[in-house]
Length: 315
Image (tube, rainbow, N blue to C red; front, side, top):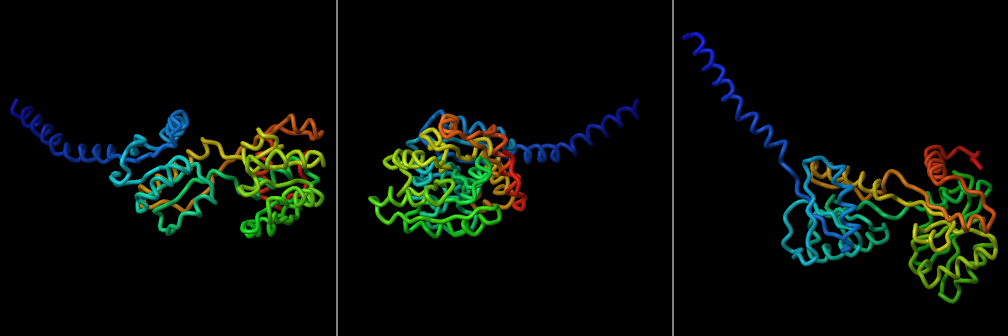
């Protein structure tokens, strides 16, 4: 009896001795990193996007959507996700020292805001690398060899890298400057006479609602296509555009949050890893252009980017 009593005491002591370690381990596991979210103001979009991010981050992150009336000057410490350009601008003006991860913003937008590349401000970019857009056109029109780009004078340098890389894919390109608004159509006609396709860009001086109808009509009268510059233009009449999905952006956000938790900073601004393709089949039919499924086009673009030396494209 005494032996059994002693053994019970030993067992109780062992459990007691191990208790603080287990509690500490559980406490460490349950320690969460709060992440403030400043929404776009569109409730459906914000809820959907936050849900995608929450599905991808570990239980060690807790996303908290701020009220639109919240005082941004008194934000808690820790990373902040902004959804859309207005949310980023609102926070940047009040608290630019906060660690900000901008989402649903384009590269040109982010470059307007001076910031150090110290990991404090980063972004998951919403636009598409222009080379990918050019290859979207190449996959759809395998025999295309010339790419025309319209540009305002102050944006001409943005396309230097594109022109240098196009020959890797059997393409060449030329930038046509629109020096004045009234020169748009005449410059566009010269661009269409040169190129097998017109490559749309995020240049707001050229591609905006007042111009897009005239650009599309002029191109189609000459049996030329417009690729890009975004998903919205496909609905307006562009033949096709690559675009990042919300799921692919959420994957990248989760990666960036993990990096912040481990290293105390964000990686540099980056595009998502994967892109999809949207096509306008009505436009394709009117121009007698056969189209593969968007998934096939997107996969073919990925293959080309991995192996530029491939010259034979699927029809």
